[in-house]
Amino acid sequence: MKLTTLMLILLAQASAAQTHSEIQACVQTTPNVSVDLPRAKYLSAGLLASAGVALQWIPCGQRGHRPDLIVIEPRNGVPEFIHPGALAYAMAFTGTQIVVMPDRVKKTYPEYSALVLAYVLAHELAHVLSRTESHSASGIMKANWNLRDLNEMVRGTLGFTADDIQLIQSGLASGNRSLNSDTASKAIAQPLPGGRGSARTSEPRP
Ligand SMILES: [Zn+2]
Image (cartoon, rainbow, N blue to C red):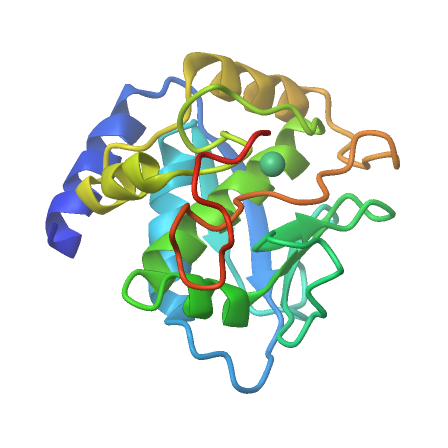
């Protein structure tokens, strides 16, 4: 799938969404990130737009940012025993910070690292915005993605469900975005079955 085709699909989904709430996010500068971050950010904004969220990426530290700025921290070298199998997690104590692990993404999906990272960002941002750790049976908010989901990512057809969008919009409407420790998203997006670095051979359970 070419990038332009994917963006056309995402734009079509975006136009179908009714409301557009604005949010801001930034990615902290981290050396040795081998994933194409600009592309991942661009694609994730398209995914959020399909849920009625206008995601604006700004530089971290920019003056005048929104008080609920969501900060993304790329973190390489996280020991495997911490959030084993996960590609990202949301920080429980702030509710506005997300840690992504680009080296795990790159290792598990060397050919699709930017694409998968875009979906990881969209998934985690949805947790923060909806203030829930709930997952769906299909789509971006599945607890674990499988090979079929990856194929849908490549085709640009893996999206949010109607329930996901409702949760996101409800969370945005309620204002305060702080998560408590009971509702924080900890781990998502296990490696696909058969992916490098994955010992799983069947679809992981949520
Ligand atoms: Zn999740």
